[in-house]
Image (tube, rainbow, N blue to C red; front, side, top):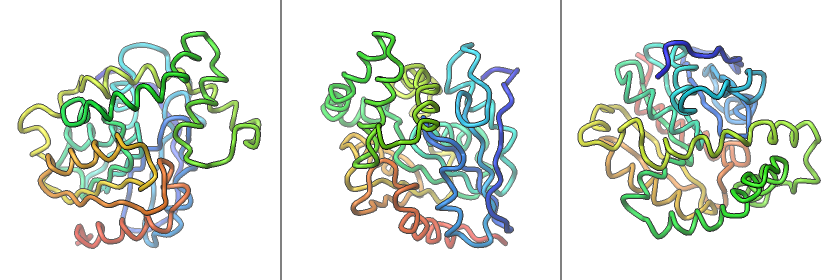
Length: 268
């Protein structure tokens, strides 16, 4: 990771003795955690905006984006924190936990796009994902960022509002951030950080929660199932009726799962 991280904006949501570092998904921002945080009493969410997202500056294009994203938020991880990540944010959360396991009280990975697991466990499902993502990738290769953002949102929003129904400010924010998606590819497909090397995930001797929606892309199920087999103490939970954006669409159900996890990792 770089020794000169870019500074990112941080939002604080809620108050309480339990402190959660929450890392949002690509094309979203820290405010996406409001619904979930509002259903967890006595809990303070520390939620940064990823580079090129929300109120944070644009990524400067130097180095690997997952490296830069991890370096940008590492200083926010305090001893005794619960760590939550969604989608690409979940891959950053896993990196932080592996690097500093003594600081993490519990780890929650929501719909992690850590496709290196599927490379090993379910290459057929990964191939189907890549085929489904073809139109989005082609739009970006053609230089049409707005169309790329529209197609990427359609693929992962699972019945959410259609692009013309979204506020212009949200469409603009997604278009601004869409360039980071291909920049994440090597890290999440090839495991550049080496998290799947023998013994690495064994460091996480903490309660872990793997959370996904029943209506998400099948490759996410392969990723969560694979991580559940590799982590020492992981619960694998499926939220019925939810898709990839379950922290936003199903915050109540997600909160129930987190409360169960937090009961396994009490604040002493």
